[in-house]
Image (cartoon, rainbow, N blue to C red):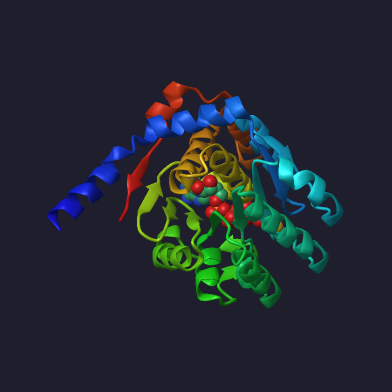
Length: 283
Ligand SMILES: Nc1ncnc2c1ncn2[C@@H]1O[C@H](COP(=O)(O)OP(=O)(O)OP(=O)(O)O)[C@@H](O)[C@H]1O
Ligand SMILES: Cc1ncsc1CCO
Ligand SMILES: [Mg+2]
């Protein structure tokens, strides 16, 4: 028993978070992973620009007819149901299936899963196709964990991320995915460990699709470190939060924050990462 506790302790202290985050940031820049995004109409621009600023290569391709040619070449896939309609679902499922078969990581953003039975059913089907990571806001993660609707406001959360820790853990255990809950503190769990990312600024909630954008960034980080999804997910959330903090120093409101966040992400250097990354073990 003593030995097990010692090992657990070693495991928690052994991640040098700021160094890990910097190392993954440079890997994304040097290897420029190709990220296929099947995403909502609102998020396409900020998502593609976020990926480009981080050094990744975005492609917003969703036609069922081209998946066979295209998906084998990607490094990771991001699926987001924000503006879901029935005709998009077959592409999402086929791309997820293809990614899983090809051994490529894929991430799911269950936007407003609480809003309708249609969204809930779609997400449960996608969850069955084994995403590496699910990233949502607190209300989305609670709804998905309980397989029930009615717990949010449009696409926004009515819960704090810390309200969703148990839901995130049970969803992670049931699905086999790492689950990330965004908010003032981002919560990341594999069902055992729970990590908190304490970066970002509240104004990020006032820019539409920042959540969608960070889910795509998670896909880019997982693409370069597929065997450590927990670390890659926490790192992507931290990097995005740090860019938000740095962008906020020049911003006058949400519109200029959007611009300065993307600039900051592009220009992030080692000193900024090492001094600003704030990741802790929560459980
Ligand atoms: N109060 C806060 N303080 C600091 N950062 C925050 C806060 N709220 C959200 N964020 C950050 O903003 C980003 C988006 O998170 P949010 O929870 O708003 O996603 P979301 O609801 O899915 O957004 P969307 O649906 O518009 O894409 C994340 O990087 C998160 O860490
Ligand atoms: C506002 C909005 N509506 C559907 S998707 C989306 C982007 C944020 O999730
Ligand atoms: Mg969202």
